[in-house]
Length: 321
Image (cartoon, rainbow, N blue to C red; front, top):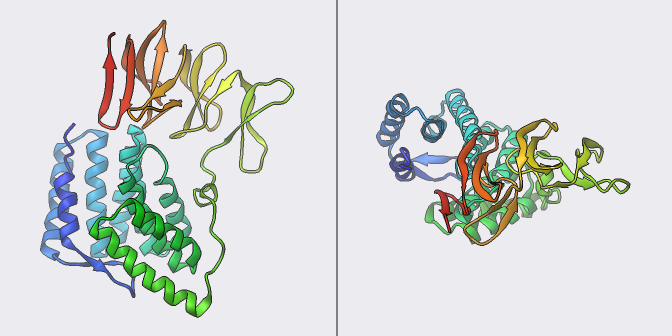
């Protein structure tokens, strides 16, 4: 599938200037180029109607609006990009969309919202370069709040995962500021675990000791989905694979979103792992010995007619024998 915004994102990197230490915002190296990218994104939005294309193009336009100082428009575009990405369910689309909206919140001083989105942008089956970039911007949000220790953890991960010059300039600038803040006021509060940063986005799986069946607990440790399942996977992308007599999936409220029709929902990935449930918004569904692919909404993406299927970021690998 062609990425209709790839060239625009590359143009953004060229048009943005270095991170300013005083404001923790990027400068502008090419104002005209930035404006042209914004206009081209708008023109393509009228031509490309798929949810994935809309998310990518709105994300690009949101960045240009943010850098140019139009925060209301940037927030509207970035929030719409997240909604389109959520509808698709693909981690590679959703993570950058969340990070871009987090950036809008960060520069506005809405740090709690920004921190949650940066944390969620780390979740899923993602390349290290993508999580590294999200970590770099999460560090800036922490520095603005005096969370120096937590920012240093993010900066270490960012430098390990994404050595691109654009990211490393952010890391180097942030390290200098962190040293200065620590010397003046200490290292601030201790680092928060991922679940706290992400706002406890999903219930935790638990097994009832009396019945042996599985359910899910909320952040207060109380059941939010009763223990009614013989087998269950963790929540991934807002849904969890569960089994009664057959496998299906539920949302965070326990509502069935994928009918209980399948022999299994174990999803092989191209790196050799097998995930119980969904990867990038889809799962490998087995029916009568044949494998297909089901979307987290319950929509059948690939009918169950193959012997083996593995989920790949660019599509699926399928075999008949």
